Each structure stands twice: as structure tokens, then as C-alpha cells.
Length: 221
Image 1: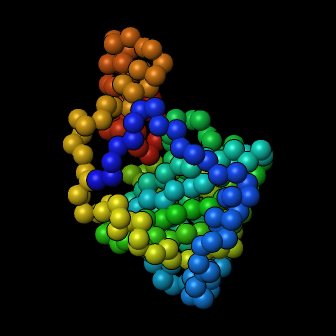
Image 2: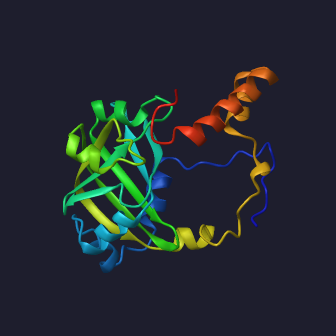
């Protein structure tokens, strides 16, 4: 494992000219890597997406402030509509709506799909719009619960990303898996951050656990 840094460590940072020189010092992109963005969803990428149970969505607001959010569902929930279009269900969450609000002012979107057991990932980017088409939403229903809307992406970038990151992280091997008690619950973390009482933290933990059990695909009542 890498050595830990001291709590007071502050890294030296490059200025603009030094940063440009650093980037220019990297080897040239290989011909294969340069060509692998095929700009469409071919049968291989389609099958990967249709088997994938999770993707990460990146958006930004009008000022360029970025957000990345995970979206998880049973395989088959992410819909490839044609070689240039993919649809992602928008399931109930915390109602911050960071992704949807960003798309109201900046329709650019990027996605990374993961497939458990496979170390390569699929990367897409394009323009997103929202849809409440009844047929599309019905096709995304889980346990009889359709999403409120779908994010429909017109794809301009599409390619398979190499396995190095997942191999380094040993994501699917379990080598770095931690026991559940190695990290406090999300309710307790937020409670600590906001200075909540122990009673409120306990109530929050119970509420979150109930939500995880009862409302993965519909708003919690």
C-alpha cells in the first residue's frame, strides 16, 4: 500500500506554463487509441450496456461546476434505442436533482458503464434530453414501478476503455473490500457533519435503512 502523507502535507502545484509543458511531455496517443472512439453504439457496446447494472453520469451547470452521480438498476434497465441513442431511467433519490437541474442549462453529458467481472468499461458522451414517454418508462419498470422520467442521450462518443484502472483497483476481486463496520452509515456521517444529536442520528439511520428496504424504485412514503 502507498505510504500515508502527513496531515499537514501541502503539494507543490504547477503554474500554467509548467502544466502545459508537462502535458506536452506525455507520449503521443497510439493510432489504435485515437481511432477507438467510433461515435456510435455497435453490437459489442450495446451488449455491454444491456448487461450493465450500473453507470456513472457526469453533467455540469451553466458555470461549468460539475457533478457525477451513480445510477444502478437490474441489467436491461439501460435501454439502447438505436446506435446513437441510449436511455437511462431516473429513479427516486434524495431530490437534490443535481443531474436534472444541470441538464436544464447544459445538455452535455458523459457516462461510464461498468459490468461486474469485466475490467473494461464503456464510455459514452453526447447531448441529453428528458422524456416521459409512457412506452419508454413502462419498459424500465422494476417491481411494477416505472421511473418518473428517463434521460435520453444522443451519442456522439462511444468506446471501450482499457482495464488498467479496474485491474489496479482490483475492484471485482474483493481484495480491498472492507467490512460494513469499517465506515459509519451515511446517516451518521451526515449527522456528524451537521452537528446533529445522537437521537437524531439514530432516527436518521433507521429512516435510511427503511428506505433501502422498501423504496429502491419508488419515493419513500
